[in-house]
Length: 243
Ligand SMILES: [Zn+2]
Image (cartoon, rainbow, N blue to C red; front, side):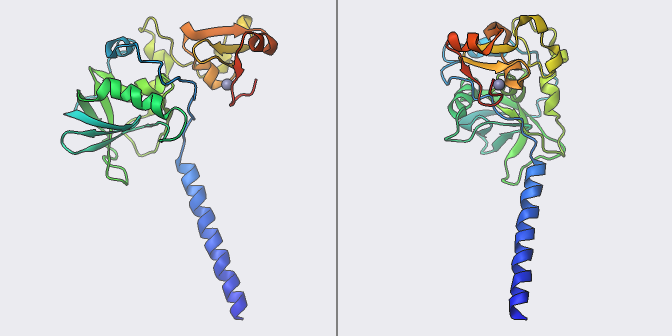
């Protein structure tokens, strides 16, 4: 009798753990990082070089403060003591590839500068007490920028005032000239240019259907007709699409 009870008890524990794991997995809708950005990529670019590629945001500045510390690509401290978590996006944690690139980028644009916040009206704080907000630098949505630069992934956790998928919708950005936005639809890839997309900046190449290949900025794109051709030119296969 006692043994049976013990078995039922351990079974219940296992069930509770499994349910917990499932709920965590379903709450998380991340899209993955590119892991393609060398940490020195933005070293020689000025803040305005980067910001000028993007349209002014329609997010409203509800609060302004000075950024005093950048913890990582999606978390900063303000001079009023507030800790801010960029809403709708996620950047690599310390020790993960891409961490330095995203942190350096946010430092370049935010550190010791006056920034604006559009706080998430649907959920003002996360469970760690961090303010959930869009960070606005010189009228631009920085959450949107790190997403489009491939430094962050989408992390949409409803309820939220903001829908980050909208930030990578290329139809919204037709007015921008030099920079080509993410093309998430594989059927939009020109079929006559080759089956593989190389990134001349990262040295990696992708299947034309790979979302990371399609995220490659137009000025960094190289098309290959065959895998062998890409390899012969020194390009390394993407780990995600394994071309
Ligand atoms: Zn790929």
